[in-house]
Length: 202
Image 1 (tube, helix red, strand yellow):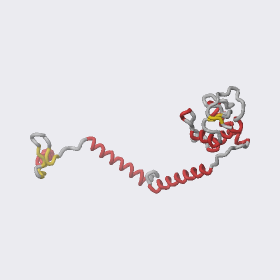
Image 2 (cartoon, one colour):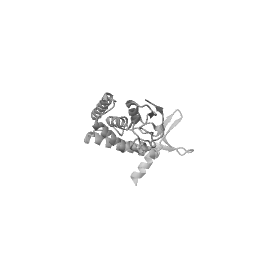
Image 3 (tube, one colour):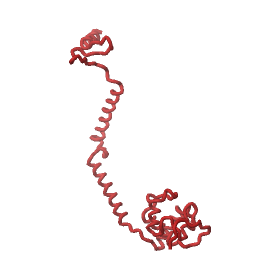
């Protein structure tokens, strides 16, 4: 009890209470008429401070004890460089890819497989057209060259409901299905052909 009384007495000696605002003021801290307060920090500030301490401890343990690779700059640099080199190699491979009509039986067979699995839902299995246009006549909405069709399959035509397949089909698979259209469907007689759409090409 004596120690507690002494502690309270000491605090009374260090602080005084403002009679108007009940603020606790530090004695002897008066600068040009400005008195220094001794208010407790708000709880949210204290909790934020505690969280930063906990974060620093966890971060230090992961970095110095467990050697977490995502925190080591050298490892992160190597990972970023590897990712860059991989993307560079993919870009180089894509640039080297040549869009030209494929005529081999193997390529056309793969194109047929892709056609019946994906494209037939909108264009019919025989290419006569359903939601999508007829692929057997000489009328084309976006051109009739292998490059034109390849661009449509790659980029899609969202205004017409045609999806982009660049993320679903490889470059070769897109070229195979386009070649199948031009080599096997173009000029055939579907059972129920859709009315011509677009521009007529020779």
